[in-house]
Figure (cartoon, helix red, strand yellow):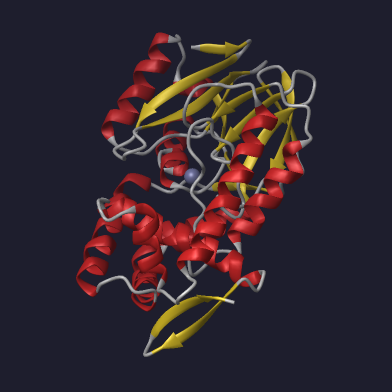
Length: 319
Ligand SMILES: [Zn+2]
């Protein structure tokens, strides 16, 4: 579906609770550009094949592939698509480090992640299940492309327009958005979504205070003259500043709730259960715990909570 002249939205299936991703195809003078690629799993790659056929395109018509960040639904099929198109795959240089750590050395990371979950109070039998569930995703992010690295200060011609590449870290450390100033079009990836708040994750290898990065990125881009947002999940939307403010409020409320939950001293896992409930699948438990940890790291950086190891378990307490 053409959502603006020369910009097409491609909806691909994902095998998660978030069951769909929007990728974008932009028509240029000499070829087409893809922004985000979906997972390399058959329902998604079949959709790409059908979409290109319906649009009368050959793989060789694709001249460039951009990945907003390293998460599996965005990066996953980039290697598959590069093999078929021969096109360069662009990603921010910081994200390439996460591609190495999370996808290429993924299994080597498992003990470190297990240790993080353990010291934050996750029950040992659950840790095993959550880590096994993570391993399942690795086959859907293969093969790996040869990456071309971006600094986040580039301007690129896509779909007959000039887009500024905007580094908006937080959801991941090197997340990029694409902004066209003339028409106020923002291709926002996962940085700004209409219906859900982007997951903010604290991983052993990520920035130590990702929520701080995310809130700063939201504030930094709040004043851009944006008229139309093309997100990676959910419908195209317009109320840019309203949505930014909603998200800022959402995180402020969540911080205050987490601070309350830590008043008498609690593990991150315990706080996470109080916040998100206990009826979560393995993927959701993992996401919920690292989201809780990101908020606790933020509160700790502001000296609103402090943490202490007690018998190998980290206890957070309101200051
Ligand atoms: Zn993401």
